[in-house]
Length: 423
Length: 156
Image (cartoon, rainbow over all chains, first blue to last red):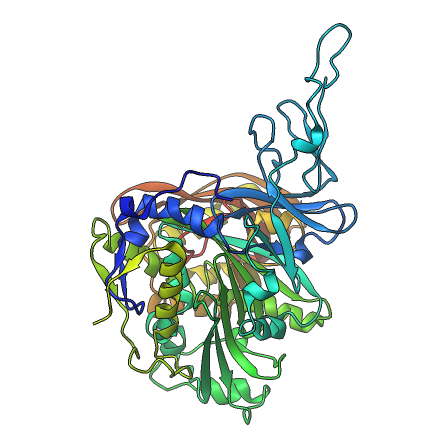
């Protein structure tokens, strides 16, 4: 299935100092060769990459440009309503075919020689195929069926659309796995409406962002919004979960049941005489929408998706690797189709909390860039991920780097990198 | 002397961008009426009539909160913005209110000393005449530069 020549591991000589994910050689962040190998072993390998929301392409003919790793793809809804995706590269001479971010068309025509393709990526027409007057056309053995676009496997899970280059990866629902599905089901429990996207570009490695969303330890230390404004978060209970591979995970932070939703604001926004306080705390209001009163639900589905519920903001973040030291985040905001106007307005207001200008998120890309700059030229050194390492079963805490360690073991195995024996 | 409306509105925009470029963020909310809307939203969403913003304040208290958070809570590399504005068009005016649009370009200079285009877009403004002069009742910042580099801390 790999479309490029394999790069041997020997050439890279990446070795993890330990077998428990607690030491990560910086070469995995600052090596262009590792990045190239990831394209082959992860993005063109046995994984499902998040492409977008079904709600973005509700009508037949709707399409949106997206990515699987660095490969540009187009996700479409065909005339019969089925989802499809193909590499945005003409089967003739390789030109990019789809030139708009979004649109609606049941035919996609390459402008170079006007080869035209269906929304499913099948070649439909080739100009001058049978020649013209006394001029020749394509050879008699040319069959349009042999020259469709490079198609991806496409599946949707509850409106989240994924694509894969792999013929062997398990069906999407199995790939997501029994530990992760209930968390997705929780958020995607009824029809959603797409509210737009915002984009953020970072000069750092994509896996630094995955580490970040698997690291509740940093939350109260890097993001000082709550503490600065003396916003007490009492009675919070964290739960962390991974799938069998460690690559996917979920963090759920729930308020104790006795604190009802109406009481949330009054009980939790307590201010001190000598501290800073918010003049307008409406940005932190919250309506209970799920069985649990959860303030944060952060769920990376490896490699390209992070599902986020923070208060009442709902976002599917797409993580797109652009180079060994560059990634892009696309925040797909959504609400439920049955939102009241008040709830919808609340979701939009809470966009202030998240995204590139978010009160409790803007530091994340700042931190990943600090790491990228800090490790330049030091691929042989390794990070130290020790918090709660001696308590691997302790999952009901924010003060843990357990998800990070599980992730790196899953990554190491997927990439085929060696590890020293853990002392 | 009667100052033409266009010059009054240009003066407002120039004073507004100077406050941000000079890092006088505490002055920034004073350019707005108390119940003003200030929003930064990508053109991508605006064109599709989709509401997701990157920043949205629906009164000046929220703007002062944003400034307090930038000064005391959030962590980011101090930006050095220079705003360039051009193409101010007055679309409607009643004498007491005006609707206008203005192009803007913001360049940022990093701590290491390189300058790059940070954001281009247009201001879609509704201004009202008050006892303290013209103020924004609505300032919608619609940006073309859909990829926000690293983060957005300071207002545009």
